[in-house]
Image (tube, rainbow, N blue to C red; front, side, top):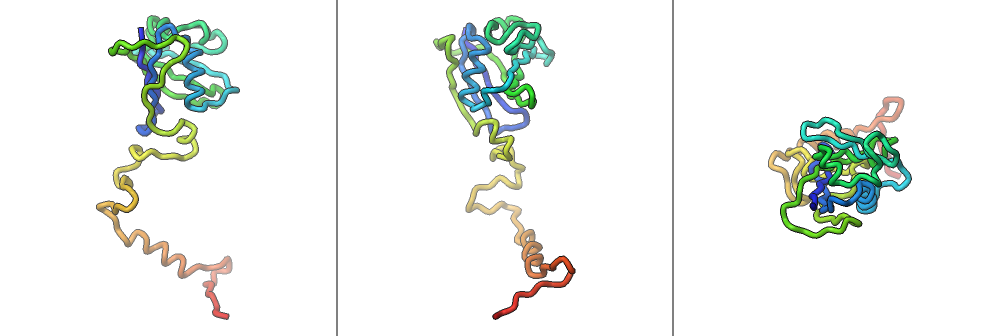
Length: 183
């Protein structure tokens, strides 16, 4: 069985990764591939929190047995048979950094090795870029969605007049206006 695993970030439309994963692939192998592709830190504890269709937790898989098995002994197919339709994958447990994984059966017959998931589709930069303030075009409010060189329909030059007035009447810490003198 081959599964389509879609990786997303909560509330961000400008990011996703789609993997094709053999059902025999362990969660640890999936972790290693995602860590490599998305440049997750290598020195952090990881955890897969398995979720059912209704959002309840069906298992937790980590480097240590958290009650459901370890990530290196549990295959994706075994987790799905236990009721998982998705996961919250914590790539940095200590700092609670995670991505969401949704799992679906792949309908197109494809052969995928259990040793390496295949990255099928990519959108947006790696998750760390969103932590550093990156905002995808799709995530901007409607009034800010225009390309360079275009002027938005509701553009108002008066919005910029206040900035110019402030520059002309700058004051120092005494409250007196500062004037440049010609020399």
